[in-house]
Length: 543
Image: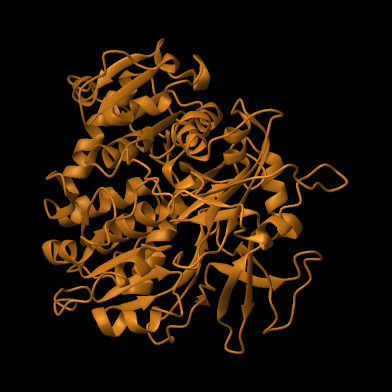
């Protein structure tokens, strides 16, 4: 792991430092066959920074990427940052109203999008986001772009790169306080919030992981999570950069292919989130389960029904942790910790303070008692800088000078933090945070729906996560077909957010202030009137 003064904790400085040290040593290899060396990454992004400058990109502008795990994602990110622009990462499952909000909030000057994902922008009104240029990668330019891009200049990625010919951009030297990226995290009672990510904050994700997993130059990281998430981009890929190691990046996770990919890549470390480790464990046992080189894996959550058997079966040590896009990873497990469900680990106390407080009063609770996990940094620029264009949400999250995670936990007698559950009204499914508000907005726009309420419910086989249940009040005289309603949802929201369960009800009970009482709906779980799309044989198509 390189030693770099905190005054130089920027993604640009990290790349330049490692390019000088490691030259043409391989940095990233993608399953598509493309690769980046350390020096090549620095050189190529200098050139593409000139191409962005030719499009008018200057410091402070936003460059939005709806791009899968491809080399173009990494190139566009650093090239934009070398001009002082802010890279906006977008979940590649988003479309319709979900994507419209983020485009309008970020107002990017340039959008980079995979050809196959261009239709995700269909239906978004012209002028949303004020986009000036669209760069289409990983495929041919569509014959017609969606309405929102009709006034924008359209280029292929090769055409974009050609703009750099004969040009040399004046590169920007960021500081750790400068904003490197905006990453959107789902709201709970409102739209998704754009987390402002300083360069120093981004770098700490990587430094913390390197230290925790003892990442070494000879390691190979298997990256199967999406690069638009902090886990893959900042913990895994940036951790590899800091360690001077190598990474093998695939487009999407597959439990059935996981072991084969470990063997193919020679991976020694990897990460898994949400139900991923359980899906791996549920694969049929094989005599070859330990035929690989992987020694450690960061994974949360760990289930009591499979966790203790995972390590001996695969020969991989699981390390847990706790964190969020907003607050970094302030809590990490240690190799010597027992593998207990919910045991997040130890506070990284050279960068953070963590307390367990009463969620109503914010007063500390005694060790052993459950309260809300609250966090604050002790080092500058190692935390989010707020929510983009949502000052009221920033203030709300920082009540009493602590960042409120909305998660319940407890501290044990050894000072270790145990994660218990969420306090916020947010649904966690397949490693994604889902805003019930945003799902409800889509449902409420259905012509036969009077109102809706969306909750997360626990069911067997969900790996400690939740499934999405929609309760629907039909309009008078309307007859709603459940499968047809799911068809409607699948066209307008990310695959992971489409409800699994639908229940039609006559009325939704409200509080005196007019809010739906959701706790009784969660408590009711599955009822005789609940329709299950999986039991009905309904299969969601993959994009």
